[in-house]
Each structure stands twice: as structure tokens, then as C-alpha cells.
Image (cartoon, rainbow, N blue to C red; front, side, top):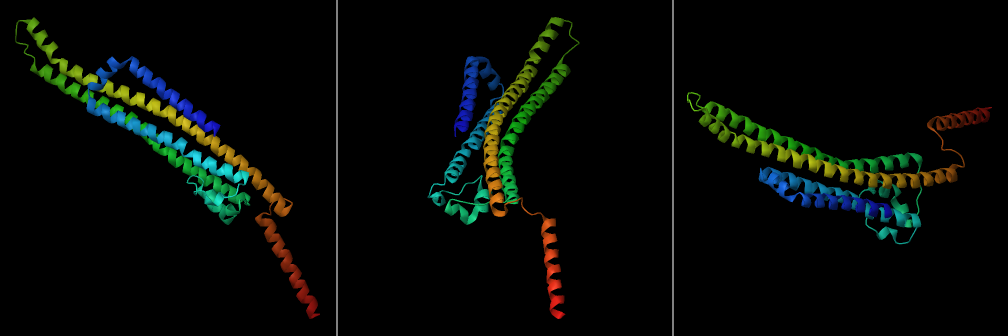
Length: 267
């Protein structure tokens, strides 16, 4: 549980630093945001949803850790606890043993349970990874959108110039006035790129922290289950678990003994 609190602390501290930096550069950041506020607002909303999902990945580990802790201590009343979501393969594998606060787990069952838990963790992280890629995509889309408007505006300015005038000052003034619109398009392009890439960096750091929390939980669970599995194998057989070849050999030996008994009875 302490590792989980530490992860939440670093995630919250990082977000606090990001908010402080944004507050320090509020004026230029506001100007960049208002260059295309509709598109940039979409990027900010995607970032906020991604942050919420990342925190959810960490917070969902808390009931799982509580379930494992009560299972390991063997407290009575474990069966009244709500069935875990992430550890559902483990809870189903234990079956009725979970109600008795004790269980046995073979090596093959251990591998199946761990693979199921690992796949569930990967499914959760795929969502935040998609949001990271989506932020980069929205930033690039805003860049190309702004550049497209810039190119169209520059083309209109060039075709609208009257080179037949003898007053080159007037021509230069018309060119300068016509380039104001392309410059606005460049502001749209670079502001979207700034927010998209910045948001992907923020969400990427949070996803790394959430991944570390999940990996620590998975490693501790694997270590505990591996130790229990070794004890179960030693108690059940007093030796390593029989392989398929050994079982087949025992079956052939038993069949051979049965044939010998039948021949001896006929004699």
C-alpha cells in the first residue's frame, strides 16, 4: 500500500509542477490557446480524460491489494469481500478454497493465473497509450490545418498583387497587409502542436508511473504465488510434479503388471 501512495504522490507532484509552470507563462499560453480555441479545447479535454484514466489505473489496485492482504493473513470473513476485478482469474481458480481462507495451486494453474492478470493490466494501459497517441495526432492535425490555411492565404495574396503599379511602396503595403492572415494560420498550427505534444508528454509520464505501480504489484503477487506453489508441490508429492512422460511410463508399467497377472491365472 505504501508503494501505491508513493506513486500517487509523484503523479500529483508532477501535475502540480505542470500547473505552476502554466500559471507562470499564462499570458503567452493564453494567446497561443486563443489562436484556435475550439481545436485547442478539444486537446485539453482529451488530456483531462487521459489523466483521469491514468489515476484510475493506480486507484484500482487498492482493492486488489486489500484482497490479497486479507487472503495472505488468513483472516476469517474473506468470502464476504467483493470479488476483485483485476484478480478475477485468481479468485475463480481458488474456487471454494477462497471461502475457507486457504488454497492449493499447481504450477500450471499459477502460470495461467499470472498470464490472465498480466493481460488485464495490458488492456488497461492500452487505453492511456491510445490517448497519448491521440494527443500527438491532434497536435499534428492542428499543425497541418493551420499550414493549409496559411498556404491558401499566401496564394490569394500573391494572385491579388497588382504589379502594374509604379508605386512599389503601395505594392509592399498590400503584401504586408495580405500576409497577416497567413501569420494567423501559423499561430493556429504551432499552438496546436504545442498543446498536443505537451499533453502527450504529461500523459506519458503519468502512464509510466502507473505502469511502475502495476509492475510492482504484479511482481509481489508473482513472488508470493510462486512461493506458495512450491510448498504445495512439495507437500503433495514430496518430489517434483510428474511430467506427462512419467505418467505414461507408470501407465505402461501398470498395464504390464496386469497382463502378467492374467497369464499367471490362466496357468
